[in-house]
Image: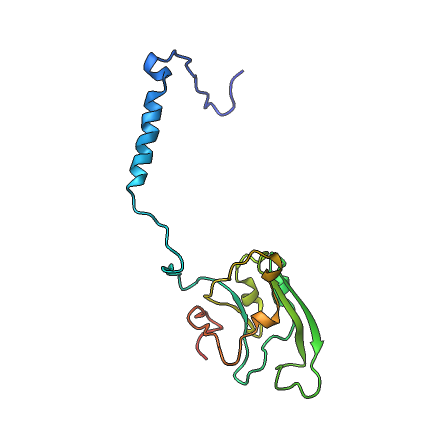
Length: 180
């Protein structure tokens, strides 16, 4: 029967010579590759002492931003959770009570906001979907841990502190987040 692709290749079953049957050329070739790699420059860094330079578009740890008056920008619209392909974001919306005007910008706010960092793929779709510019991915590395429960970040770890504002302009020079 003829092949459909006409790429049929005839394989010869020739006898190996004595040297080839000892597999010495293959072993010497493999050892030569190993010896060449021993003298190459290594890409490994000694992490705490040396740190790798990241690209300006690196997407790291999330942050929920505040406005100039210290109020949370998030209005719990849920667009970030819908846009997340990994379904890593969950939130519960609540109504702002009387006297909480200095805490939240809008009438509705996120009572609880959680990101499962083990599910997150750091794609940045959540920050693109946010109409209030409340969530951003910073240039900070997500800390490691041995316990899975530590990777579900709530508002206590996501909302930026008033005394330690995070500058996102280093990474955010896009059209709608540009200079105002």
